[in-house]
Length: 254
Ligand SMILES: NC(=O)c1ccc[n+]([C@@H]2O[C@H](COP(=O)([O-])OP(=O)(O)OC[C@H]3O[C@@H](n4cnc5c(N)ncnc54)[C@H](O)[C@@H]3O)[C@@H](O)[C@H]2O)c1
Image (cartoon, rainbow, N blue to C red; front, side, top):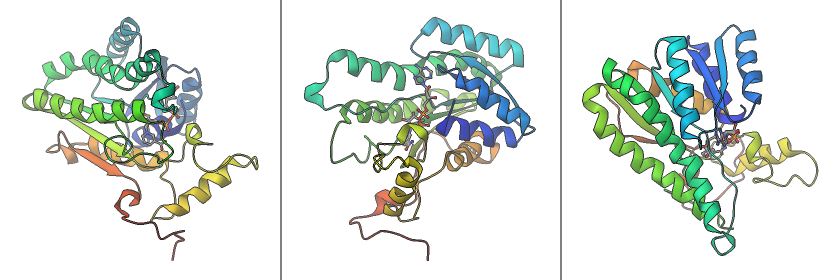
């Protein structure tokens, strides 16, 4: 696991949670290893969220190993770009299968026990892209549709579970500095993706792209009892980017 998921896990572990990192990629074990080396408590499991049986089985094992799941963060998601006229149905279906059905499957796997215990925090990863904004170059109809769907899913589930003491909220990140976004922002032509990403950050009022830890800090709040009266909320975290009616950057720290 890399990117935002790694940032979230690191922050939660630093604040005392045992985190079970799940991902289709075996990099997840390395990330869990790093958290343990830094004094946190983490384990990992390979899950493909498009496989319903695998998801059910994995959460059963996690609950048996750790007694319960208090916090679920539905973060797995893909964001390739393809214009509508070039897209076939299988592409659209794959985007939904990961970005929204994945969220459905994982939530369904943890909910019965959360409802029984009258406690649980579900945090879903949407995006400003789709529900609020889009790239002028296009290619985001599939992604945008899935991320808007995450918001509807969150609100409906929040209502369905409020009386069980379960909080369901969604985060709408703007531009976050993660390896999967390299090349989408700024050019990699000069071979320095990090530099391109940094310079792209000057387009954002706060003068930088967000970090995975920024998202982790918001997840920490939503996973804590300090946010216990918050449910069905959609929180934008984007360094002020979508507040701009017109761009007047580059924005350098004063
Ligand atoms: N980076 C951004 O700027 C940004 C902005 C808004 C929203 N988001 C959302 O945040 C989330 C994380 O994005 P990221 O930038 O860290 O990307 P990322 O590619 O680093 O992380 C996504 C993770 O999902 C995993 N994954 C993909 N398919 C899977 C599957 N079938 N089963 C299980 N895991 C699977 C990938 O292996 C990867 O580790 C995504 O949902 C993305 O849409 C990202």
